[in-house]
Image: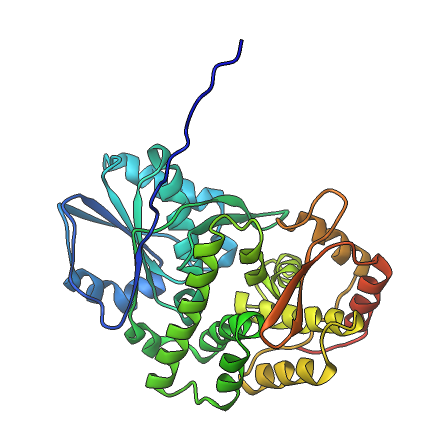
Length: 352
C-alpha cells in the first residue's frame, strides 16, 4: 500500500529590500535584537529610536567569525526560551554577516521557524549576506556547513551605518560587490573600475546595483540548485583559506578576494578567461586595498578541503570559473593536476 502525502503548494517567501534611511519599525509581537558589543555600542540606540514592539529584548553575543558557532546560536535560543518567545515573535539582526547568519539560523530552528528582519551594518552584509536567506554557522570542518535557507521578512539597508565602518571592513565589502559584477554584469565592472567608492552617492548606487543583481539570481534559484551557486565565485578557495587560518587572519571579503585571484588563475589555465581580464580584476582588488595572495603550506591538504565545499560531491569538486567579465560557469571534472599546479603557484608566493 502507498499513501501519498500531497504537499504541493506555493509558499510566498517574497520580501522587500529597503535602501535608504531606516524607517520606523512597528511590531505587535515580542522582538529580540541580536547584536554584538561593538555594533550595539555604535548603533543600538539609533535602532531603538526607530523600533516599537510589544516587548523588546537585546541579546548580545561575542564579536567575530570565530564565534559563529552552534554554541553561540544555543545562547541566542536559550535567551528566547527564557523570555517565552513564541511562533509569532520576531528576531532583528543588527550587525554584519556573522550576526545576520546566526540570527537567521536561530530564527529558522526556534520552534521550527519564526520571522526575522535583517538590518546589516557592514558593506559586505548590505550587498550580499543579508539578502537571499542563507543562514548558518561554521564548525571545525569548514564555513557555513551547518545551516538552513530561511528568508527574512525584510532587509533594511541604511548607508548611515557605513560611516562608522573601518577601512578594512569597507574593502571587504567591495570584494563582494566586484564578485557580482565579474559574474553577471560587465558594464557594472567597468563602472566600478572608474568609480569613487568613497563617495556616499556612488557607494549607494553600487549597493543598489549589487542587491538588484543578487535579487535577480535568488529569484531564479532560491535554494542554490544551479545559477545561485555562481555567487560563490572566490568562495571555494576563500573558505579553505578562512578555515586554515582559523578565521583570525582575514576578513571574509579578504579571503574571497584571494579566492577570486585563485579562481581566475584556474580559469586562465583552462583557457576560459583572458589573462588581461584576470589582471584587470587583480588591479581592481589592489586598488581597493584587498589582498591578492596567500602562501599555501600544504597543497594536498588544501585540495582535499575542497571536498567539504557544499557544491562538491563525493567524487567531484565544483569550481566557480569566470569565463570572461560578466560571464561565469560551474565546472566539475577538472583534472586534479591542473588544480594542483594552480595551488603550487600560490604555495611558492609569500605575502599578504
